[in-house]
Amino acid sequence: MTLSETEIAFALDQMKQLFPNASSTLTKTDPFHFLLAIILSAQTTDKAVNEVTPALFAAYQTPMQLAQADPKEIEQYIKKIGLYHNKARYLVACAQDLVNNFAGQVPQTRAELMSLHGVGRKTADVALAECFQIPALAVDTHVKRVANRLGMVDTADVLKIEQELMKKIPKDRWIEAHHLLIFFGRYQCLAKKPKCGQCPLSNLCEYNKKSSF
Image (cartoon, rainbow, N blue to C red):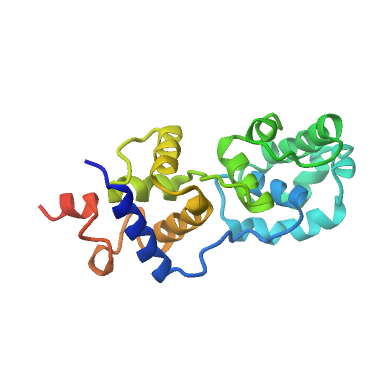
């Protein structure tokens, strides 16, 4: 039995009281550079990305400049973060896609964004929401964990989680819900040691109910 729309709205309101300033922790930049930052953030922390991007972005200010770069040059800027070999290739290829297919502009639809190298559905959703304020609800590891533990959804399938949450959460709260679920998962409902004893949602939480037995 999953939570109702009313219960989910209540849960989000409680999260908002805990984390009133929940938002992206990637450094905000122009759409092109922010898209690159999202690609770089896969399987690493936003903090690590924020440490390497200033020098990278200063060196490659436009898609054309980056499109003409050798990935090995890019590696020197991002080698402190995980998977930097692959990510360097993705960044150059993504810039080439932007130049060749979109006149150097970051597109504003999910399908077009996902046509870019290095951009999957989650990255596209984050770009839509953060760069253009287009409602989207990206599902990362925190959103997946919290939504299942609380009983908002009951599936491990990321696409199904996204679709179910979008059905149950008003469209004008999708972006906010994404940030709230991430902050709740990052600082309250931790993967290994969730703070169940001081959680305002323990009465709703399916995970807490099972752990109590």
